[in-house]
Amino acid sequence: GRASGFATVTGAISVRGGDSTTLTAAYVVNDAVHRVPGGNEIRLRLVPQPTIAGVRYEVGIVLPDGSSITSASRELSRRGGTAVFSGVRAGPVELQLRYTS
Image 1 (cartoon, one colour):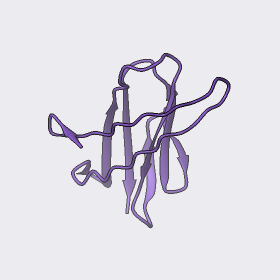
Image 2: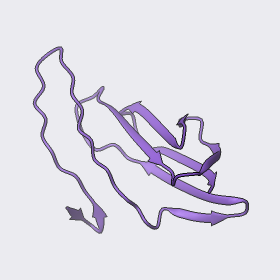
Image 3: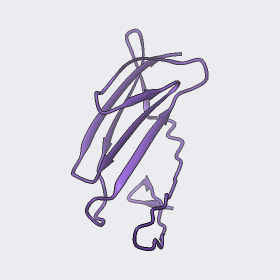
Image 4: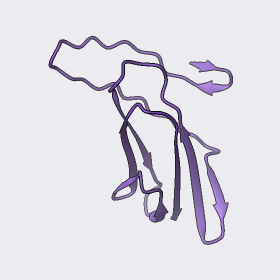
C-alpha cells in the first residue's frame, strides 16, 4: 500500500516461543540513485517502526548487474553486488553507498 506518499508493507507473523521467522518485503525505488562524480550514490535513513524490543531487521541494497561498490557506510556489509545492513531496533541509521556500473 501507500501512506503519506511512501510505499508501505503491513503483515502479521505468529511465532511460537523459542522459534524465529522472517517477513520479507522488496521495493524498487527508482529515484533513490543520485549521480555523483565518479559514479552513483544511494543514501538511506532507516527508521524502525515501533515493535517489540530486540527485533532484528535487515535491509539489502541490490545493485544492477555488473556494478561495483566503491564505498559504503561501516554499517553495511558487502555481499557481491549487494550491500546489507542487519541490526536490532535501536533508532535511526544513516546509510550511504557509492558504486560504479
